[in-house]
Length: 290
Image 1 (cartoon, helix red, strand yellow):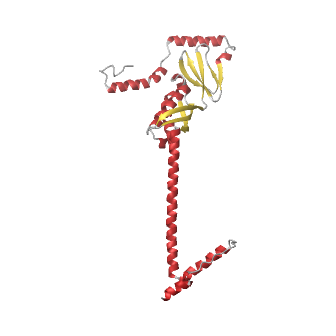
Image 2 (cartoon, helix red, strand yellow):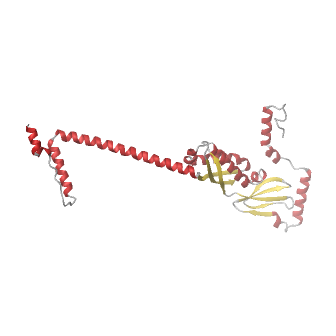
């Protein structure tokens, strides 16, 4: 590959063409035509099968399960995937590699991530994926599962590093969808489809946990005080309205007095105190006469 940094004569457009050419290397390699030597070896293999009939059938016929595919390489070149069920190969020149199409999963180990607001947290998760193109998963990557495992770890750190601690704790579902989309896009050339990504646990430092607990407790106390103050205000307004009504009608105060006595007597008290209005006191009546 020619590097545009080491070759000043190459323009930006030319370097873009080189990158596009690298993306299509797989297609070029897979469309290479067979040579004369390949044709001769295939003919000899067929001749060997015919001569050793019917014993050669035990070697030529292979089977794979419903959830498997067999990627066949003929003289080192991929001829596609076969299965499920029974298929035919040529002895000596064909090799097969079995690929499992079932959904696989792995745990993302705890990753220490520095969030956008400079808080260090430990986050782990789980990834579910499956192979959708057996040929690509064998010819384009050495170990598809291990590569997806490493890519998931780096993607988790990249995604969480762009968010604050509050966003990480509140938007787990959104972060999981973003990770699933990024992983699926990156593993698509390998013939892998990432079905789901889940964040399992977010571990905070102990000091941060204590600080958040203290903040939450202070917030609850402040909210309780606000509610109590609103209750006192509503009660004072109600008492003022009741006092205004009683001041307009003297009989209302007497009815309230009798109702209070009824409530006291209903509680089975041995001693009942009868409040005496000040208007009935001798001194008060004398002052009024004066």
